[in-house]
Image 1 (spheres, rainbow, N blue to C red):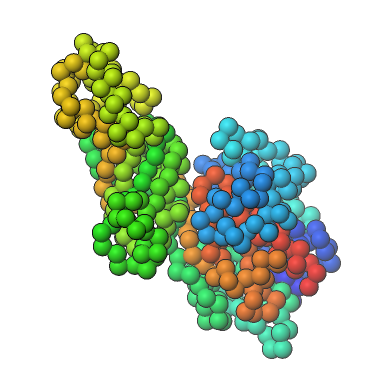
Image 2: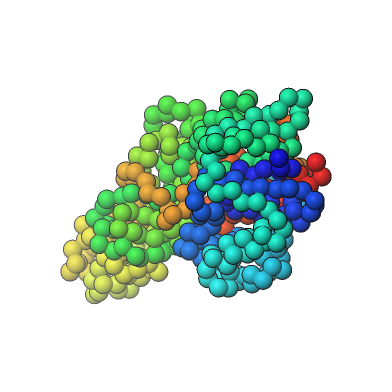
Length: 423
């Protein structure tokens, strides 16, 4: 018999357990983890460094990084945000650092620092950790008198249950059976698979771009119909920032933001669609045409391929010039109006065909989960079932890359812990 059982030995589960025990040391708390080890996602996140959170300290700005959960998280972020998370770890002997792009990591550059902190705290607070304890069922007891949790060969009881199981289809199914609405899960935070001669031989190059996904002419999905512009030529989705060319296609923040905001639409497209890339985002096609004519007047004796008058990688410039059918020996003075128009289009609206996706590193994130309408965000408590709380990715909240998904886990766990400590 426990006061509180937490299903899920990940970031949200451990943070909730520690915060609850700190608030009320008389509670008997247990974490149930189905695997042999705990905090597996923490270990691999941020390339093994653990991107703890992001240096955005204004809740109104912080919520802008959540395609799902933006409205609901505003209040919770006022209760527990980035600065509070930083204080939590630093007070427990884990100094953090803010990198130039705003991401926050342990100064040790090792996720093990976070894991060791959690394990030390759970031991100090007397929190039980039950590994290899896959939950087969959880059922509310009669007369709102707690929960019964069944693993492979044991039964447990608790007054309060917190589900922090992440993207676990079996847990979602049980919640559905108990009356909760589960928004179907689709991948978020993924890279685009693209085979194209313009980028085939230049993996590793990174440059700032603007990326758009144009509207398709055929719409089979209500989601797409709701989000498309009235004019078909207008983009459904757009993003900007660094784009990284990879061996399999495109990645980087610009692409990852598109994958997060477009998680549902791109799933409807079965991950086959077109993107338009503006490699010189400060220019429109018409503006760039004019600039190219000016360059022609000034640099007439030079070859186009060897000039690269813009701030993009040289090898990319050469490939885009070749795609515009510009011979390596062609001089600016000899370029026709049509040639310069084609070059301007390659530079500002290159069209690429995306055929599939790849997981972004080891950081598998999904959109979907428990419907946000069925959660009280003042406590992260279920509106459907008594003494049931949620934290982390089990609910329909997800974010772009950069530490924001962890921040959701920390905040939800903290708010739930405050409420559970009083029950």
